Length: 562
Image (cartoon, rainbow, N blue to C red):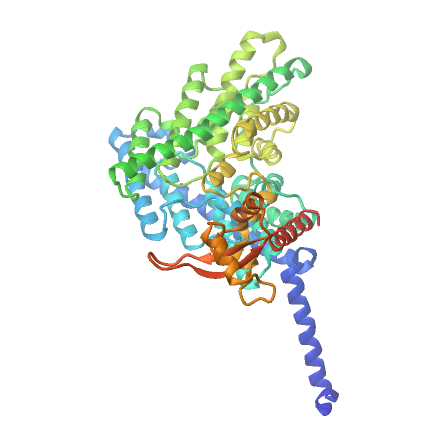
């Protein structure tokens, strides 16, 4: 052994292995502070950027193929020239295909999107489902290509999250590093989709990670910049929308109007969110009552959408053509109002029909139409005190989107980056702040968090609420062979009186039981088959539950302030 230690080659190999092991542990557990991690963030940004680009190109190709047009930016105009039966059949065919994909490749017939990425960041160390995610990406691609009235940002965010999940699994990354990799992927996907690098980075921090920790900022910005480069290589340095050169604000006199617009947009966003969930509940009740297979549900939604599109082709796809018409003031008052109402209905039908897509593009369209309608009325009532009515469309676009997404900071910036108009920031910020302040009190902060709340995932209240659901009592309890465990006789006496916990329960169930019962511990039992007695597994002590909860809170606070 001594001879081996004196061998310089072997000693050098051992030192090299020790250095490698230390580097690997740094990468896994303290990755964001290391230069190597920034390189990985860059690679993830490039991969997510190309994924977003390919998804967008695939939508454009399939949409052009199905509808027979070379210019999909004028899709709704072209759809007016199609025979009515094609406008009806294409969404129905898309719905059938989506239903079959979800039937065979998911266990619940539900499309994964942004809400699932938020849940993965909070509860699953930055990981998301892959098999169901791939099925959701295909479903969203078909939905958006065949007339579904949603947006493309939700699918690309989840696709990017799958890429980061794969990298995290390869690295065996811990929760902090996994979440930061997820943030990098999301930022790049949003940036590549909309040519919005600043908003992409802030969207990842504000909506997905839901904190602004300094340690994650640099790699997320690197990834966001990479995604933007991918977009600009394909499309050039151009904005999604081109505004007229008359977005002037009659500063102090006109600001109260934008405050009112913000409140109106907040109400519109609440109606939009609640309308989607009301439609979803209605369709679920009908489906269960008549025993309809859930793969039929998207087909029925496609039939309804096709029927609406015969008269209002503006609902087809992401709706950028109509949004652009609103921002440039090329719609009349009645058109703005009617198109906004029809779009909300179409989004509700698409989402409740369990088809794919996201909420960002629809909220932009509804917001621009709402703002235009408000601006036409306001400027006609007070023409001498008003600037351009198209400015109201711009502010409304940001206000509705911010309230729906629960992202006032990133949405404000993404509106500027989509339009290239940075001179009207005060009007947009005022409207956005009022809409989000109102809407967040009438729903669970955003569409995504409300969606999760309906599934029993309580993220809206913050980590003090959702961390309890992360710990199963079986992880924290003392087994019966523990020296400090209570006697079996005492435990069985408590079980007989109904004071016990199921082994599959979480601390979310346990802590309220401690409060109401006043006991120091609760027996933990496993419920077996019918007619079989329960099995005593151990006991959960109140002090152990509180210690586990406090450690989780401390770790979360450390991550958010690092």
